[in-house]
Length: 206
Image (cartoon, rainbow, N blue to C red; front, side):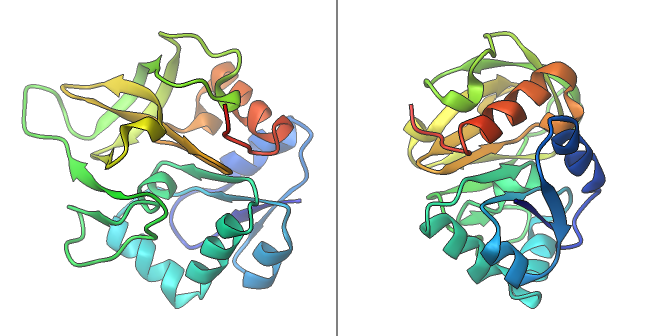
C-alpha cells in the first residue's frame, strides 16, 4: 500500500486519483501508524515551507518520514514535498527542513519572467534514473512554484528545467525520488513517471 501523507498542505485527491488510474493501492492518511506500515510513501504538497514543516512536526510525522526513508521504503516527494527534503529555505528563515538532502531552497530572482513559475515547461535529463524511463529531453511537465531547490551535490539532480535559471526539476538518490513539477497534473508524461515509480518500487538507482 502507498501512503499519501496528509499534513494539510494542498489537494491530495489528484495524486490519489492518478495512482488509482494506474491500478495502485493507495490511501491518503494523517496517521503515523499507517505511514509506518505502508510499503511506499508519497509526500506531496503546495504552499509555504515553514507551514509545511510546522504541520509535519505538530502531527508527529517528521520521524515517520525520516524512518521510512532510512528504512529503504520507496519515497516520492512532489513540489513542496521535494523542497521539504532540503535543509532550509529562503521562504522560512530559521526553519529546519527534513535534511534528507544537503542544500537549500531559494526564490527565483526578480526578472521579466513572472513568479510564480506556473504552467508547462520542458525538462532536460541529466542522470539515468528508472523513474524517468520513457521520458525524453524536452518533455513538458506542469509547474507551480516560486522557489526551487539547490542541492549541494549536483549528482542527485536527475533532470533540470530552465526558467531564467537552470534548476533541479527532479532529484534522485537511493530509494528517494522527488519532482518539482506535479506528475499527477502532467497528463501522460506525469502518469509515466508515476507508473515507473510504482513498477520500480520507487527505486531511484540507475
